Amino acid sequence: MNPSPHQDATRLAAIDVGTNTIRLVVVEVQPDGTYRVLDEEREMTRLGTGLYETGKLKKKAMERSLEALGRMKAIAEGFGVDEIRAIATAAVRTASNGRTFRGQVQRRHGLDIQVISSRDEARLAFMSTTRQFNLDGSPIAMVDIGGGSVELVLAAGSVIDRIYSLPLGAVRLTEQHIKSDPISDKNWTKLESQIERLITKRVGKPPFKVKTMIGSGGTFTTLAEIAEAQREGAQGSVHGYKLATTDARDILDRLRRVSLEERRQIPGLNPDRADIIVAGLASVLGLANRLGCKEIRINEGGVREGLLLSMIKDRLSARAAKKVDVADRMDWVRKFASKCHSNEAHCEHVANLALQIYDGLEDHYDLPEAGKDILQAAAILHDIGYMISHAKHHKHAYHLIMHGDLPAFSAREVELIANVARYQRRAYPKKRHENFVRLKKADRRLVRDLSAILRVADGLDRTFTQAVTAVEVDVDDDLIRMIVDAEAPPQVELWDAHRKAGLFEKVYGTPLELEWAGVRERTLKAVS
Figure 1 (cartoon, rainbow, N blue to C red):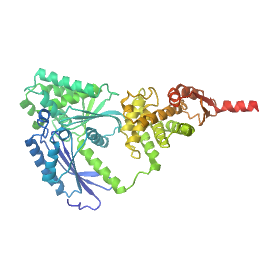
Figure 2 (figure 1 turned 120 degrees about the vertical axis):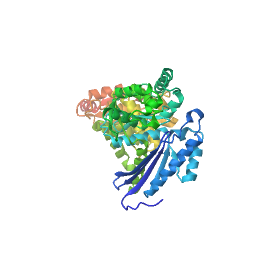
Figure 3 (figure 1 turned 45 degrees about the vertical axis):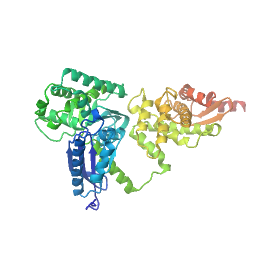
Figure 4 (figure 1 turned 90 degrees about the vertical axis):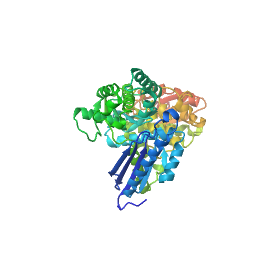
């Protein structure tokens, strides 16, 4: 591969091998991470044709895709790129001969195709969304629809809450349900029922409703192109295009009632996509209906741009050659908390109180030193779920932390932090909870120990005024006593901490007594 002739710039190429379409983008990246697009290419090779009936990629589809990949590699090399990275999604991921296809690509073109998981696919598409749109903390649904699957991300601004993958791609649904031309009422009913059934099974009741769906993939861009042609007659970029879901439903109703040949004549509709557009739109609108979306916005980026952004991020990190310092672990936690618009003063104070309680218990209950970082991080992040919902903010905190950016912590530590924050309130940790039961036995015990402390510490700042300034812990055989410092009797704090002490008393096997230090001081003065 020829090196880039530009000393200060790096040239990169990203290739997304999808079920329906293969996409290439070539860019030139500046030292600050900004880039300009040098070239783009896409070919609808229909790699996944017949896959969902046979479980295999067909030879002709593989050959079309191999030829397209050869052309795309040649285009990229013509620009002297420093790196080409290629990924494959649903079709290659699920096909029994997907490995064979990857081997052929390697032998013929020297390209190593990485098969990514559905979750990674969703994350890449979401990276593109956060770059292209100002999300300003609002709840949004990001949907990336391909030929084989749909990736759904529910987020509050740029922070992910949930990720779902659904087998509702446009090619898959077309092959399974569209058996007549025009589409019969029977086929249409079966298609809608299948979509609703799978959304109910995979998504269930959404954790929150969202007004806006931001969509990427050919189904979305085609929808916008049809809408634009109807309204303005113009054909150009549809990036950022906005339309009401009711208008999208009208377009779908029109498309499903006409023949394939008539669809091919509709302005704005690429004839090559006319056979799969109905199923694709049915999938999109099924999700919009379940989520309560009122409008759809179009992102022309998607997985391919997300791949490119991840390549740039990797290069910038390598260039900086800066390893995450363990001493800076809480800086990453605080940065993430700030991103989630948490009450920083309250959460920092709760963290300090929790650590004081931990220190008082550590020697008596054999608490691990490593648990302090887990507790502190969980306390700082325990209220980040408020950015989504008050009622279930503890559950949202779990999901936000699990999907958050905490590079100074291992995957195991992140999961422990998420669980401790999850059990700051309401239900106690139980083995029937999926997030809890998958932890190892020792980690389940640690989560119980730490979440019990966090509940009490949180209660000690119930008024959010940081009235309690310190906690001293006395441990006896049959009692744990916490003496709290405060300028005035912290009645609300003592009441709430006692109310939240149930898990603490259960975990540590002894009653908890809470006392204001001022009472003790007055008693000592009276005795003296």
